[in-house]
Image 1 (cartoon, rainbow, N blue to C red):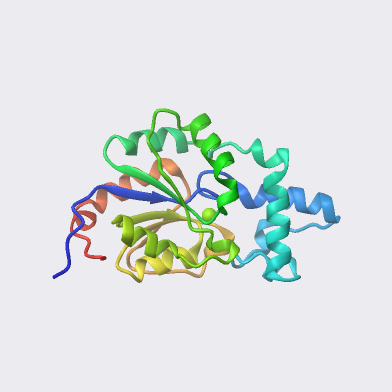
Image 2 (tube, helix red, strand yellow):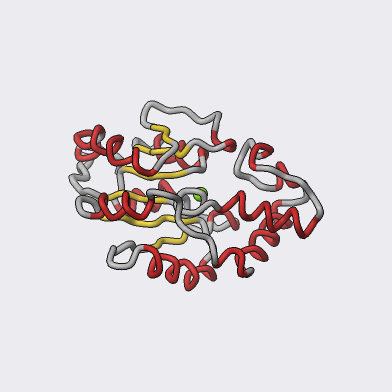
Length: 207
Ligand SMILES: [Mg+2]
């Protein structure tokens, strides 16, 4: 028999959910290469499909950006700090990110700086960089029934595992749909979506 979660846990992605990652990466990238890529060019979140070159090339470019001061100065999206503070009163929040483990110190600094006083464990899947553990597997292990994402592929993997997902509308996730997937543009809209799912989350049988 499958166990019900009964737990109030929410997973949140970081890049392009808490911070405006891709647009800022593109400013950095375009300056370096004299190119003119825009987020509108991204139909998927696999950067090499838009930028060209290999996946490894994209990973190297992302790593370079993450080591630059421009990355360190990225701030949370509007409404996100207040909303997460509000949600944390009722739910345990887990950050689940495909950032590589070497970014852990910078990631912890970010949470310390902008979400101090809120307990948010950070779990690194490293998936973007080719590691093996998927977000839906981590959510299953941690018994998290809902994830807030921008990556349609990850969100769909979660909803296909009977989880629920809130997907921030982005150019790169327009083609992903599922009955358990809910879309929004703004952080301050998420508590209402989560509230409307409360019973379903409590009874989720995803594990
Ligand atoms: Mg993301």
